[in-house]
Amino acid sequence: MDFESYRPLLFSIAYRMLGSVADAEDMVQDAYLRVEGFSQEKIGNPRAYLCTVVTRLCLDHLRSARTRREVASGMPLPEPVAGSLLSLPPESATLAESLSIAFLTMLQSLAPLERAAFLLHEIFDFDYAEVARIVGKTPVNCRQIVNRARKNMHGGRVRFTISPAEVRKIVERFLDAARQGDLTNLLELLAPDVTLYADGGAHGVRYGTVRSLTRPLHGNDRVAKFLLAGQAQAPRAITFEIRDINLAPAIVTYVEGKPLGVMSFEVAGQRIRNIFILADPDKLHSLANSTEQTGPPPRAS
Image (tube, rainbow, N blue to C red; front, side, top):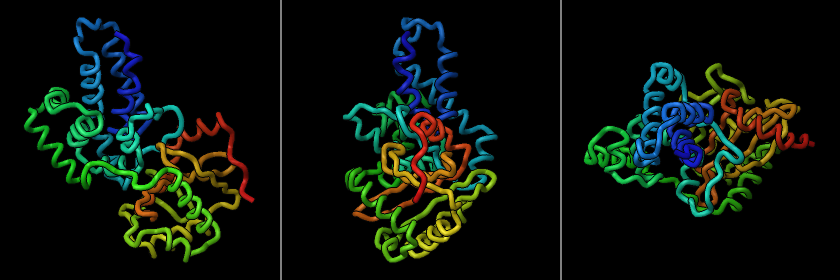
């Protein structure tokens, strides 16, 4: 059996399930070790079998006592990813949408079984009979689980209402306004009901004034003032770069060439609806690695 040909698919499922590159890679490697030496004749349908193995490994991981304690500690955001790990065929619009930080954050609000069934059916196009075999439920149960998850996901999919190029222009304007302390322009870019999520890690890593928020911050006035306060207290040596993170424009901040945090956005109707700030060093490894390969951004003037 050619396991390597299925590795990208297995990683795609595991990363969306867990929101962690390292954990996803561990699940895929564990799956490899479990099937190493198996012949295709023994397995029958390699794609279905391997997806079953990886999905069940992810479910076990999510249900573990250690993971439950970590999730209960605050408002965790998924690990951001840049580069070839997220390479997709150009026709995979739905797969690209499901990689946004907004979508992955919503996904983490689902129970493990809901998350698995929803992903397999809605994103990876497994029918209910296939989903049932993978998660060990009946097709009727799986349909109910997916319907419940879809309601919790507010319809099921995050749609890009404007092009990435337009999003980038809005992010550029946002960065300019924040760096200049321009409250008026910042308010114009934020939707009235904008929500901000911040994850500074288990130890409350500081990003300006930002630590992990146990609850999201709502409203454009509160969010704008919170952001400007954070910018005012940021390190003097900080630099900024707009990069494609999870296939969408985001702001990455650096100190001495090392990633300090990532700010991702969900934009709709020319305004920012959600902001996700991640400043947990344990979740910035993939960005640090890609920075080492491409070099740090220029220093701020």
